[in-house]
Length: 216
DNA sequence: TGGTCAGGTCAGGGTATGAT
DNA sequence: ATCATACCCTGACCTGACCA
Image 1 (cartoon, helix red, strand yellow):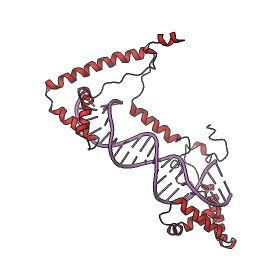
Image 2: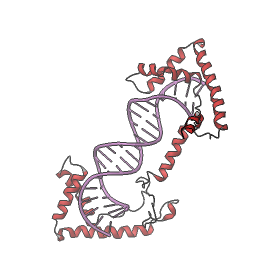
Image 3: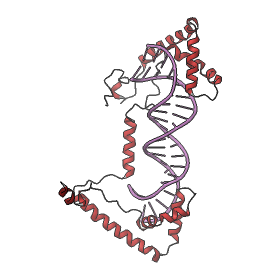
Image 4: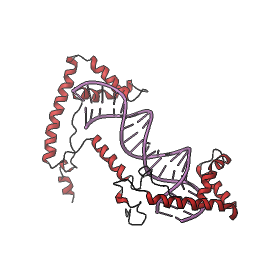
């Protein structure tokens, strides 16, 4: 119904909390002169803009500062009335950008991007031997493999390793298999005495089963 | 599916800079 | 905390192979 759209007052827009004027008269001065200050500080650090602003502000006489102070007071008054209207309209005063960023970061540290975080793992936890005998082979020969294909990416090294691994006879692979068996036994032994740090999801080891994630 | 390896890439967040 | 923004740093992810 077009009538509804036409009748909708601007107030129907999502409520937005008014921004608090900050920095006092200096804040007004800074905002007003930012374009020219940015130009003047072109090619310099971003911080040069505010540094320049500070220098210019100090040079101003009281009379020159007065209009900025008046503007600040006016903006402050407007903010207060706007905030009151915002709150009266059911708006909720939210936290500042930094507080929000801090909260976001904390949440991220706990959860990451939906996937588990590498760095969040317990560094003392015994490493599970992976890749079987091939994993041992890869570890032992990595340096040589890298030398053989200098400048090649990790993937290039992996390809070469794969080719070499396939070329090995069963007898040649045997020592690597034995080494892997040893590592596996050592890992099991280490896990017997290993205790995950407190608060680590009740000590289940990384939801090995499939109860977890169900993110969808 | 997740584990090994390490280098490259990329996104996001922090910092600096001033005054209030 | 707030304004703007370039720069720097950190951390997650990807790549390839293979195996439990």
